[in-house]
Length: 282
Image 1: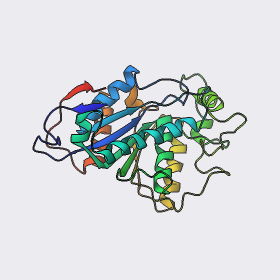
Image 2: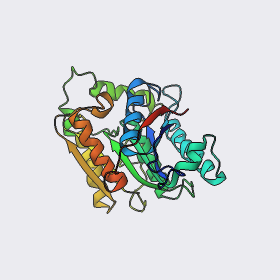
Image 3: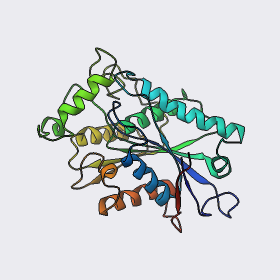
């Protein structure tokens, strides 16, 4: 958990309470954890620049724990948050005193974006009861979706890049239930066995896409399909950037622009002052 330390939004400090941002890291469901330096740096920056409480979440890894294990673990994080909202006393006093449980955002990059999508579906369909916690927005950075039919950007992906199609396909083989294809509902939200999303009350969704991400066409298709259903979804594209570029370079012009876009989404406008950050609280 990452807590701002200034009085911005802190109860007892003269301001309103802070939004809560639940962050799910990437790794194709198979590698990494919230302790990885890259994800630590991301959590530090978004907590500082968005003046938000950030809960950096972990999940069980495939192939030992195949999907939907990671989706279930994501829901467990929200249920944990609900318990603290209901009890009124968190294990960390800062969370109980400073968190606005009615302004919760879910942010995920790559496979974390996949988790965030599935949480939004469960929440928006009424299957995930976390009242009085309210999810008021989702941020998906290069969400890791799949499908048996190749999108153009996938088919044209260079074979010699590290984060290429061969690696992504291998991750799916390790992460999906044994024998499942990339059209499994955990991978393809619009696959032949996936539940219709027409009646799901999605919270607002901000999707961040990168020009050189091999998943860019699948991401754009995801946004187009949700828009066709009348869902509140926005797509922002970043020229010249790679898959989950913000994770690998959380500083720089592109990262600064990403923060501006997400700050507008979370706050409507930039906060008056950036909050200082003390580092992980637990």
